[in-house]
Image (tube, rainbow, N blue to C red; front, side, top):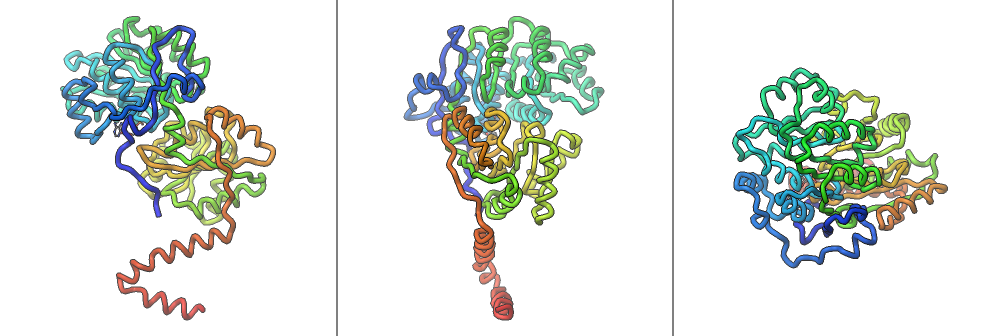
Length: 454
Ligand code: AMP
């Protein structure tokens, strides 16, 4: 049986609860689940706002309609009116909350299609996220007059990107390093920027893009609107917000709702030497369509990937060592269903957005609690439910506590399936097909085979 899915992400009144505070200088945006966040949490609305009440321009409404979005998600309901009113915002929200539309729609509302200059710039930490965000913005712009959106990222040739920039684009979505290169070469000018977005800001800084981001802000006009989104709000991000944003409205979508309700979070105590065997049994008994397994190092990712293959589980590994092209191919196979298990390091899996992932296994406890949040964000996407299982060796219980403190939730301890559970699962699966075989008139063959074997 596959996991329960919903077509649409939950509307604002059923999904996360959001909380908005006007900035009061020192009171920087609380991380999603701080005590302050709960204290001033907005009351649950009996009926959530509609897209019509958000005052978006008609072409954007038409695109929303075509995309099948019915009700704004919490982050959209809070962020869109503030951004349309010209305010800067900081949003604490993870992927899967609808944050791309939360900034993408107001960004397009600020763009003048008649002016063929770059008017909006979105910075994203990875090539995958840049492509994904550019695609989403393009789909929101589908009913506008010829608005061009260009993704730019490293690892791809400069010339086509330069040519596209020269021909005139309205929105650029890119990784900070490559954006900075285009600025240095004079291919990109920020003089007409009205809207600047930092998406997954914490990842961007963690990946060492702080200097590039500073440089980019320095070249943008001072009169511009800024939206900053981040799954977590460490001091380094608050500093960026303090330096570059004007009196930002702070919006936090409580993490409880976006992860806890969508993702069942569990852990199992597994001695190091039993990890591979345990993983194989977890995968063999999981009902998820696809799974992603996180390891701390590239070496471990390779070892675990090979061990799974030896055990007859078709798995692929992506680490920083795997070339970009190859990584894309593997992700595509995962998306299409040709591959069900991906073993990855944190770096390799950044921005990975595959709806089929119903299970995240932390083969190694993540180094920092923030990485945990990002890892489990790979499941429970687009309104689906997911499960996250973390392997903890007996002496790593302290790390587990620190994760629980960060997410302000407790992980549920579970047992690793036994070899007997695996057999039972296989039998259950085989028996699940009996009805279809009977209907197809092919049950006789199986009864005969079982009789022979018995
Ligand atoms: P994001 O968090 O921006 O990556 O969005 C997660 C997924 O939710 C994407 O597949 C969006 O197309 C979808 N989505 C965003 N907003 C809505 C909405 N209001 N209603 C339904 N689906 C949405």
